[in-house]
Image (cartoon, rainbow, N blue to C red; front, side):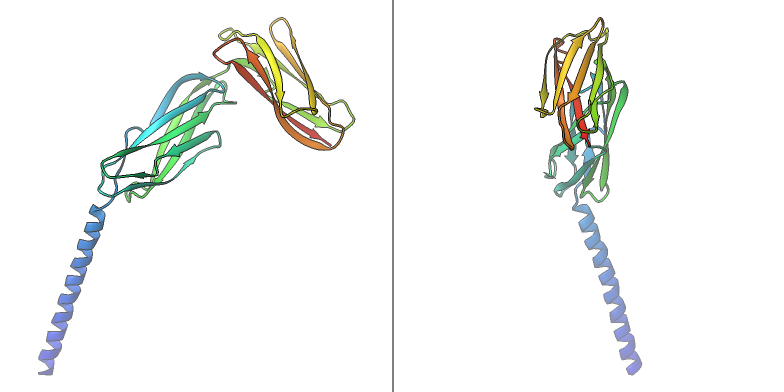
Length: 235
């Protein structure tokens, strides 16, 4: 009698375990079927050649082909020159966008290639990568690129930059002004045969670090302004 009772209990336990395993599989299948599905219309956007300093923008479209809300949890760009705005929640059967803005300043004569990592709650696409790329060409030759005023207070501290228009983009500098450098520097701009000579001189007579910029307005609509960044390291 005891043997039969034990066998009966064992059989009930086995059946219960089987039903539990099946229930877990069904539940897992239900959860898997109720999930978002991220679909990108494109992963790479190649822009036409631009002049250095041009802001490049593009909207990447992302669709939700699943049956649960698609969440864009975060978006990371490969450097500070690229920023992103994006739709945070996309209902099933609809689409959102990831808007990318790339700053091509300092990329003259080189390729612009940035990676954007998109993190979602799609179980099969936790991370998606987007790419913004294209060629950047120079508007003019600027040597050196920036002005650095470094030295001991009380001494003569100055720096010069040569700005040369290129044949493809001829221009004249029609006006200029300094930003955030009041009482810190003076500057002069002289036109020579084929170029401009920009000279900046420090005015600070004490230890100080400062930053600002010199803006040069041109008569070429392809690039109406050239910005020269100025940094002072006065000991």
